[in-house]
Amino acid sequence: SEQAKKIFLNRPSSPSPNIEVSQTPTTDLTPNPTSSPPVSLSQLVCKIKIQIKHPLLEKFIKEELLRPRKGAQHPSLPLLTEFIQARVGKSWNSTPQNQSDKTRFILVPPISIKDEMGPWNFDLLFGLFDLSLHLPRDETFPDQWQITDTTKISHEVITRHLENVLESGEKSERNFKTLNECVHFIFKREGFDEEQIQSIIVLLGKEYVYRLEDLQGFKLVDWDKLKLNQNLKRILMQHL
Image (tube, rainbow, N blue to C red; front, side, top):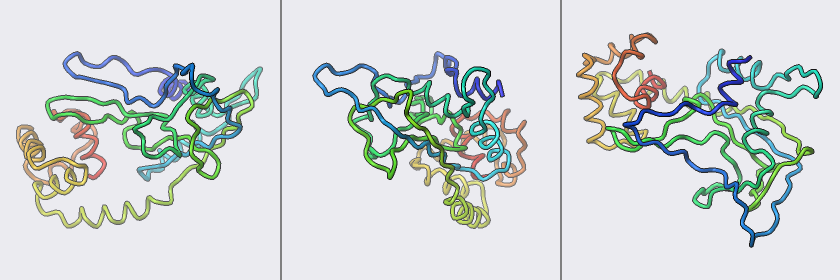
């Protein structure tokens, strides 16, 4: 659909001026004249790792991202393949030196943001799924590489980890008795320290959220009205 195409092929709008934002680099498009020519890749696998089990998400991936699109002059390509070609292009690409896993190339890196709660990463895919490129047999990417007109791009949807994640998460959440306990469990797992967690509890109190039942009964319109930054709301919504 046109809406899906805009999401994947257009750049995000400019952020608010009082928030520091930086894009996590994953691609170096400036070739090093002293380095060897880039390796032309013959095959790539795009892995789509679904993070939240929901029929609408599965339908979106199947019918919007992976369904071949009708083209009048060219062979029909899935929207995701078009996005990969636009994202990677035919320029030189390199995996960041500080990335420990050299077997994957992150297609949609997070945006690093610093606000009143400190630095955090904003996931442009909202924690719904991850997109990454891999070589066959999960080989390590060359230092410099590029795709060509003959590069074959296949897709793999990964859902096998979801059942265990859901089962363990639901079991833990059923045992929560208070809002304090719930917030501590969720945000400690996300790497927040005690001072940050207490700040979140204070912010919730300012929004008249004192009980776990208050959050559990939230509808989408209630989440929109909640005056927390988008990252905190996303984390809470994922677990509740």
